[in-house]
Each structure stands twice: as structure tokens, then as C-alpha cells.
Image 1 (cartoon, rainbow, N blue to C red):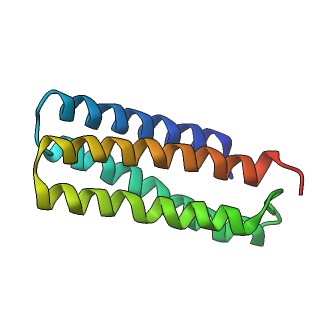
Image 2: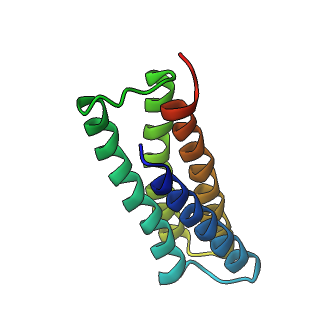
Length: 122
């Protein structure tokens, strides 16, 4: 896993989360900007899936639990589309806040995945 890519993912997830929460608290319903912010988080996660499959083949094995890493990865992949789908169905300010919470939660999972891959000792 590339450290700078992880930090970009975290920055995008946090920025998207804060944007969505601010828009929701301001009374805005989910718009293109908030849905788009979450879509960007999802695109970065899909890149991380590809990296997770390629890295071991290149000799970069995770230093922590592969099961824990996989669990976070699956959760992070499911959460943004589920939140976006719900927001599109509901179209209210609270669904925008939920988008933000989903993005921030994914940020936490991405950071934990980075720790498992590079920092922990098995």
C-alpha cells in the first residue's frame, strides 16, 4: 500500500464527510455535490481493492490480520453506496448527514487498513 495514497483517501473521506454533515445541518437535501463527494470516496476504495489484490503478488504482504483487513475493506465498499442509495430515496437533510457519517466512517476504516498493511507486526 502506498502511504501517500492512503493519506489522499483519508483527506477525501474527511472532506466529503464534513461537507455532507455541514450541508445536512444547513438544511440542504442531498445534491450532486454531496453524492459526488461520496462517489469519489468509493472510486478511491475501488482502487484500494485493486492494490490489495496486486500487492501480495509483488511481495508486499500485510503485516497484520488479513481477515480484519478484508472485513474493513468489504464494510468500506458497502457503506458509501448504501448511504448514497438511502439519501437518493429519502432526499432529506438527515440523509445528507448520514452521507457525511458514512464518509467519515470509511476514513477510519481506511486508516485502520493502512495500519494493518504496513504498521502492525503479525
